[in-house]
Length: 629
Image (cartoon, rainbow, N blue to C red):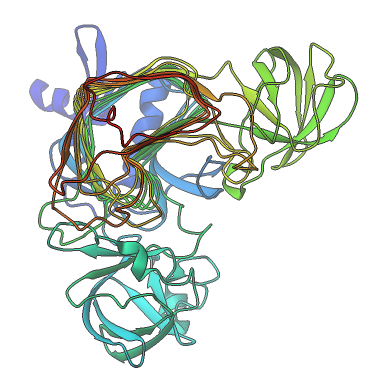
């Protein structure tokens, strides 16, 4: 009987094993295979891990479904996302030295959940698993007809939808209940589970990417008229420059400020995190969002389509997003594809001055709704003031002595130095303590709306050996006090040995492949420099359009030894745009670049009167007489 008793005891204690001094909890003895909803079982197992100091939670390889019915919920204020009550299956809150190993499993989520919430934790590793949703956060419809006289087009829709009030709504998955079976999903719109189509875009099923020159197919944000011709066939009417071509895919993620509910991974106030061999096949916002955290490594963290899914879209926002992070960010060996926003965005967030309280205290506000509740700073952080017009620093670094939150938009900041004469209403405050270094290497970013990378940190960033192809600029370096209020300048950026192929095909203005453009209030009359020490070298740039580099307000810019190759993949959208524009820059070196053109035209470069010490070395592709000032 001894072996039987041992087995019973083994199961009763959740198979806690000791291996090399580490306690391991194996989920295989929970009999979770075949269970409809494993959420409450996983939550219970995590509680046991925390109580008993178990360091590793392992899943047997399989497919597991997670529903929100029994998931714990937390009120989350998530920067660049929609705030609110969020349910999760993995509440990793106050966990330390802990590993979740999926052993190659597929985790399928249902409804508005955040799979992983990691908060006030350290030394966490998530590995060997995939994240997906049964019902996507997008509506996708195949365009099967269009009528230019009536200004309508018809789509075949297989994703869940509702047509009411002459409007088309994408439908998210809702929990089943006797009430809803009897009375219908009458609260679905109120609870934002039915979202009117908005923020729509066309996708090309041949390239599996946004349509070439997709800007000409833009619809209104909302208010598109809809008629259900028969089940699964919808006729849409909207004012557009051009009707969608037959065979294209109409994609919508729904109303703005309601469509960023469910990132796959939420990280806040945590440090020393590793994500290894994790696939995010879909998410109702970002693949990963991290704020007020430090030292994050993504190694084989992929935001990729699941083979055979038939879907066009992975994450409905950025693949990865980092706000007010410090320490080091490492992104390597990753593939990010088919997102509805950027590959990665690394930035801080300015708060704006709402009121001067006294000589040491300011009332500051968040501006964009997605920054409401944002944790800007805490006692001991180093901050500085910048002016709203030119984004120039107007104070020495100051220590935050006190932070008092009034509500989700307003906080009082008290400094260790007087601020009299250094600040005006609507100036910005920047937290310079929370600035990361970053290494981004050996990644593929492709087939996404928006940029490959947005990089805004004062510390060293190295981007190398990546393959990039995005609908907008491949790299954008910017900052603003007008909408998103994202900081900071790039002060030590190296972009080298990357292959950049056919970006800027969306038609969203003459965006450059490398777009360095602080967003001034007055774009003609500005002073000072914003970024410095940017080097772009040894890249292979394959492009069909004209604009390659726009650099504004940089002190110390090197553009050297880049191979530029003109392609005929698409017809140029902005053929008359300058190849290179240097605006209000100082200490610029352009040398050793080659440009293999197939249209026979000369290269063009403009250097404005504000720029100084700009050197274009003889023999460079842009040193010809066509260059002008």
